[in-house]
Image 1 (cartoon, rainbow, N blue to C red):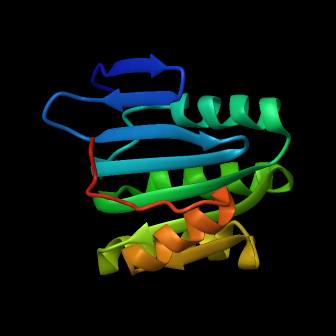
Image 2 (tube, rainbow, N blue to C red; image 1 turned 90 degrees about the vertical axis):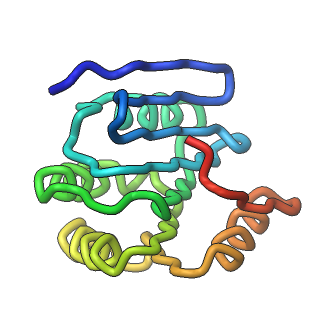
Image 3 (cartoon, rainbow, N blue to C red; image 1 turned 45 degrees about the vertical axis):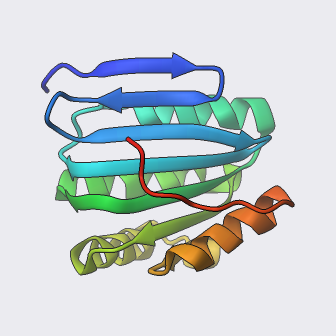
Amino acid sequence: MPPFTETVSPDGLRLAIARGPCMVLTRLGPGLVLMSASGHDKGDFGSRPFEWLESEMGRHGRIEIFVDMRELFNATQTVADGWSKWIGRHRSHIARMSLLVSSKYVQMTVEVAKLFSRTGELMRVYTDAPTFSDAISQALGRTYVLGPVKL
């Protein structure tokens, strides 16, 4: 794996590889997480995103995860399998997982992961950013406007 930079803040975590993929995990509120990803996810960040999400589970018991994948154009099968297994193992700690996709390929990958993780309606797939923003607003109990991806 190539080396990546990790920036920790009180509200989240940013993982990045120079001229490569980037992932930002942001704490929106108690038990609410927004994860944004860009590039081609080949698993370069290892278990670090999982560890951060698990720490949120430890703090709040159950979490709701929103994943903005508008700038993600690909993920390897190994990455998709890893997420499927992780979701399956932690489903009792995930209140809901909402995923915003723009690529048909990523949408297909997410649907396959949803099938293999046997999560049913636990995972919701969105193709429309305003509807995804509305779901975040509902979870937060206040208006939230999803802007352009800032990674």
